[in-house]
Image 1 (cartoon, rainbow, N blue to C red):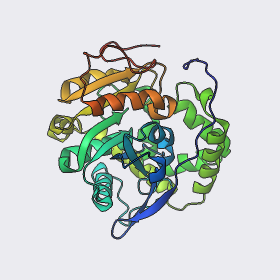
Image 2: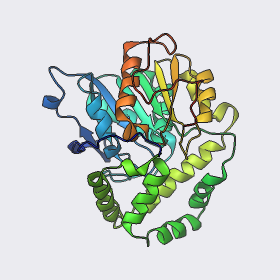
Image 3: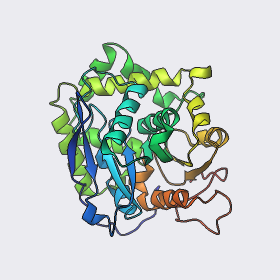
Image 4: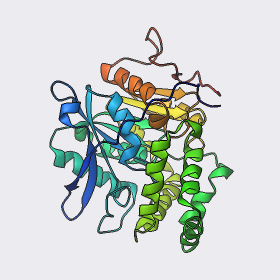
Length: 329
């Protein structure tokens, strides 16, 4: 078992949302209702999901961060409830443009930006390019290039291949939605047995709905191609160069059992992000904010408090381990 046994709490409902116009297209954004956020308004936060994810990935973390942060979470174009961009672009730069436009549209000034996986790469691009829009940056298993190839990720270049990617997705789409959702959770969680039945049922229904959308496969393949292309960029074009340009306080979280982004990348992150703390959470997969939302919230609270990595009297949560004391558990 990857996670400690504990009584399972009833999951909170997913936060309500609305469409926000960004000119010639719109995105769906979930918000913690102001009356739920406590007395007064918290500082603004914005959460950006990963590949094939949605704003629902952030429900528990958004709840944990109240009332300190008043978080919103968007569905990137082509995912969740958001239609695709009219130009059909899924590059990191295009998605970063969407996030930047949303921050400006909301009109609350710079935000505490939180991104997972693909959303981490997008959030990094936003922060490097538009530091005026970001107060702090939290990256959870960011999808940044790993120079060491991993055979278990060979499916990504295959999905990005012309014609082959569509054929593979169509083949995968013949499987029952329940099986496909479980495959996804098994890949992204350290212990998928901890997923609440109610949450699993919501994702099954959502996948069945997306099966009928004409653009769903194109969105997924477009983002896969983007990630594959980004992984091959080197020198001045490497996404890691953006890390050196970040000037805001930064937290980078990895999972010791992440099958998608290796926790070995913690060393590189610690070297390249200047004002940063890098943490490896044991017994954690690719979506730490879903598996251990309280632990992730505690780390973000430390970031907001302006504390440094190695001078705290104790860990904020049982699941915490700071780099370089990396756990293999």
